[in-house]
Amino acid sequence: MQNWVFYGLIAAFFFALNTILYKVAQQKGNFSPYYGSFMLGLGVILIFGLFLLFKPSFEFEWKSSSLALISGIFWGIGFLAVAIAIAQKADIARLAPIYNTSILLVIIMSIIFLHELPDVSQMFRVIAGAVLIVVGAILVSV
Picture 1 (cartoon, rainbow, N blue to C red):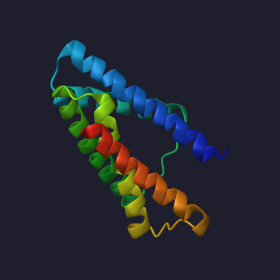
Picture 2: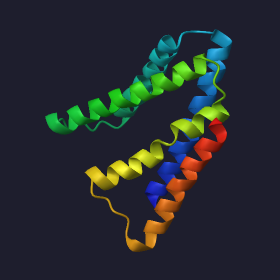
Picture 3: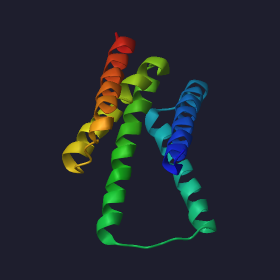
């Protein structure tokens, strides 16, 4: 297995754990989605602060740093939307497939903006996977 696949699986596990833990926290504390998102943001700052403390690697460059900051802002907006949905008593089992249709958007945007066209041997699997994602989101949301 290639390293990036392993890291992708780790990310999937922790993003899933994040969503479950956030919903439990929201149910127990009954706090606003804005406060909950703020606390989550502090957790993110803490983990990356510790990472930089023990493995310092600071190479600043305006363009890439600005793009990374904008990426974080976009992620924050997306998480805030999830937090609001959870505060409105959304079932995570139904919500997660809907917001994970972002995978389909990533595929489309990577083809359009990054020119990352799958080769012919992968094209069918990419299209079939994208269709299954959309069908799954539709099935759980109705």
